[in-house]
Image 1 (spheres, rainbow, N blue to C red):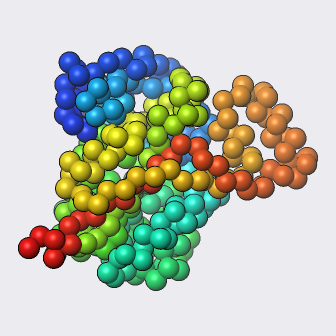
Image 2: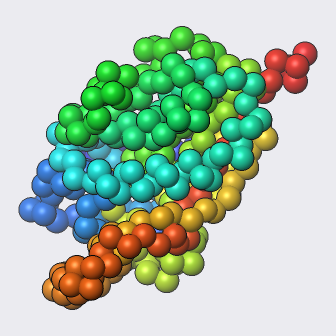
Length: 308
Ligand SMILES: [Zn+2]
């Protein structure tokens, strides 16, 4: 992780002359462990040097580890968030259901960063078939249910593993922040969609009020996040990679009180105290929907009739 490569804006390719400082590098090597690259851990507030692109509004690390090093970190990461993954998948499905009506067919689905494949499982109940997921973390795949495990491919997403124009629906949730080349991922995803097919992405919104208030203590400030989007920058990424009919909206996440407590930027001892209190009151598993500044973004590959 020590060897870093300089990079330009991962959305619009602007160089350092279009970048303004956002947050200084803050990494304590001694605190990096197997959970640093696991999803939904307790926030550590570590990050690479972050800058903001004044052209497209994305926040990005202008120096990152290389693609292979990042892949290895996720491959070896621990996995401890099954319940939260299930809750998140349910929230995504609710936000997406109205958009599914517009799909011509429901055959061929690819989820990039599928985790335990829990969202694919839920899609099955909505009539989707020919499902496949890609996931680098071995621990996450091992935690997958036996019925979905066989459709999860271990490794990083690679376009060459799939046939062009073969998917009706592609999705990538809370993953785009983690990859070193988000533009490449989006362009390659686009090439795998059937004409009229749809891609859905969920990202954190760094401009959301909660993230702005918390600043350097926002849970989005994380060593795993190589870029952070706003509505403007994520829409820009979709449009630059060929998507049409791009729609971006915030939505509510439904999580347990215990998990909300874990996300909140309280000191660790207080966090433990609150957790014990929630348990004592037997409300730790009570689920509450909240808008925490996540964006659901949808784009389409042009339909055949639009191309003629
Ligand atoms: Zn930019």
